[in-house]
Amino acid sequence: MSPRNPERSAELRERSRTAILAAATDLFARKGYDATTTEEIAARAGISKGLIYHHFRSKEAVLEALLDHIMEQTADIPALRSGPIDERRAALVRFIHSWFQGIRTNPALVKLGIQFHNDPSMVRIARRKQAAMLEQYLATFAMLFRDLGSADPEAEMFLLGSLMDGIGLNFHAMPDAVPLDRIEKLLVQYYSGLGS
Image 1 (spheres, rainbow, N blue to C red):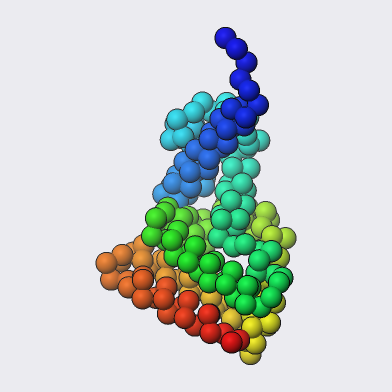
Image 2: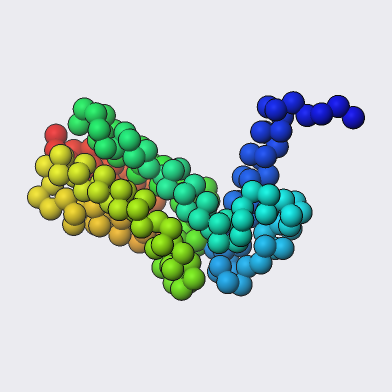
């Protein structure tokens, strides 16, 4: 048997890591953090429990990596933070589209968001893990809204976040009743025009 080449090994590592995070997303969303075991994550990912510990030191580290992944997937912080204002506005619109795409294609993310508000263990871990990242995230949006001419950038930042959380929650509860496309269009229209 010949040894694997480094590219193939990296590809396999990334594939198993992605499978672990996908399985954890679903299980944490459905069952909560405390009720989910690493054995269940491994079984759902189709890997051995030992392989989880090859990638993550603990179940908590899986949740922390999942938080990082979600933040990285939803917002391009550098594009929102600096550059010409029109490009930053375009990055905000991409962020909104990305969020809506996630709501449509990954209902587990919406459920996970609900758990992040209700599951005490997840709240504790998220607050500790995300304190610095969340501070950067909020500061970036507040700065962007200030530069776009918002009368109250901090309130605008929380308004957008609350709208998006509420839209996801309502869509999850009543998908046929929520006009997701129209809401997305309305938000994009509003934020595309902010500061123009």
